[in-house]
Image (cartoon, rainbow, N blue to C red; front, top):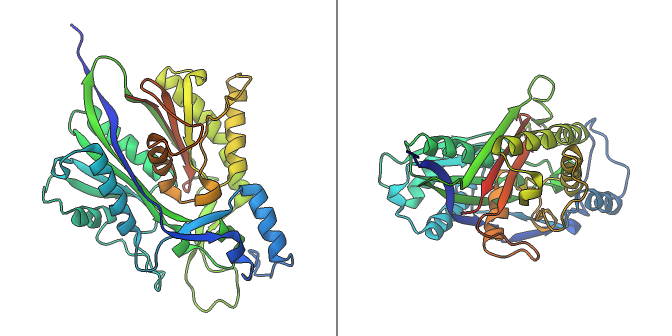
Length: 361
């Protein structure tokens, strides 16, 4: 007798992209310093041109001054619940991936109590005490890890519907005197996943995660402003860009290969790769190394939709926003159909890397 298996299927998606568009020209009057506290001698025009050449970022989105991370997470969550067509009271879990809590426009201190998941559950008006709400701080891979945790709950048979949210306001914790501040942006994405019981494989087929801390834990960290004359001891997000780039190129293709093998899916079967985006050149290099690692000679055209040019790096929100835009047909040259295989992947603070192989229902 063949027994059906529970599979984790995405039944609804939603996003919130802030309305404030900040173009690269907005940084022409910035004062940039290096990690040693020395003013960078290059002109801002030269700095910005080089920055755009490397990252391909032309503009980014900043959250409205009167909003915080839990607000935009709520809007994305509400859209996902509507998209799924479910009763919000039927949710078993609400998992919110973020890293800095709610940070006010005029006060850079992190606010984590109550959890953002509790705040979003409150904003959604959910009365069910068995809708368990908790936060997941896991660097930029947080949303993908939330999806992985949701898969564990569903495959155990203990949960049927889970809301997974990724929301971040990196603009609130970026040092205005650090060139890297031009990378960061704000946004939120969310999905509802549901248990589907059937014999044939669908939804989440496999996932892999790794954490490398001994040599890499502090490639992303918090530190004071690079400007020695900055007025207070506010902590901002800092990163060692070159080492982070090398780490990603070493670990992400290998993990993706392992995840494909675990899913028993070939690279040639992958229709789309939805990957965290902090640097377009880095993502291109990761994809190239993956194909080289698996001895696949040619990378298919239009396999990796990109948002970084206009949305920047919005951390945990990147992958769910990509998915929402993809499923709503908002990318030119990018469509998915029933039975197509998609990969979700991310790399970030920890350092953490993760991936999910997903089959469209």
